[in-house]
Structure formats: C-alpha cells, structure tokens
Length: 160
Image (cartoon, rainbow, N blue to C red):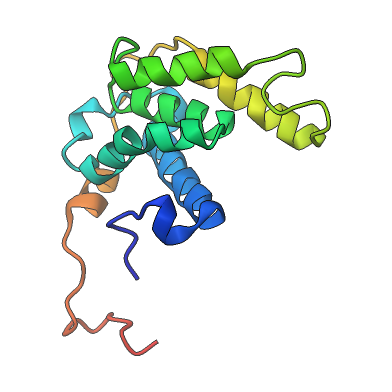
C-alpha cells in the first residue's frame, strides 16, 4: 500500500528495482511538467525521491544502464540540481563514455530500445531551461503533503 521508503537493488532484484527507478523518475517528470517546471521549491516534500536518486546514481552506473542514468540526471535537474554537482558530473561522465557508434543501446537492440536509450542519454546531457513563472499546481503539493487516511476513515480500504 505504500511506496515509501524506496528499496535497494539487493532487496528488489534488478527488474523490480528498475521499475521502481522508472516510477521515481517519471514522478519527477510529471510533477515537473516534463522539464518545464523547476521543482526546487518542493525539495522537502520530495526528499525521499531526491535522496533515492542521489544515493542510487552509482548503482545505475554500475548496472551500465544509460537509460536510467539519463533519467536520474534529468530528474535531478527538475529538482534543481546543477550540472556542477558531483553526482550529476558522474552521470554525465558515464553517458559520455558509454556512447558509441550505435548509440547507447547497442547494434542488436530493438528499435524501441535504441530510441529510448538515445532519448534518455540526450536528455541527461541536455541543458534545458525552465519556463519562467511555471509552478507545480497547488493541488499536487497538497496531495503530497496531506496525511494518509487513518484506519477509522470511511474511505479506508484496509479490508481489500
């Protein structure tokens, strides 16, 4: 019923860990309007996601996964981290060193894998600008900061 706290690769295994990573990066994308909204002001509310990304960048680099590295870098950009941050620099170095003639996915990969790997690598290396004045909608902030329903609430789904 609860996503937090997030778990490491040793507890989840590679496949579930990757899915959890994609959940976190795509949560950042949605909340950040796919890179249009700087979510730096919401760092406290999204602290668990940010800490996960920071602590797990080296894990996805060791996995040699350019898709996740690119998505981690972009998500950290959305949360207001600069390219000069040491973890961002490690992500950039990995992406630059892992690119080859066939891009990040390898020649024998499916079209989608080649496309998605290239897309993630490019977004991880891109220098994009946030739209001035754009903010995360207040109802989204409220949803994150509201308390979970108690077991006494009528809408509780504990019996399901």
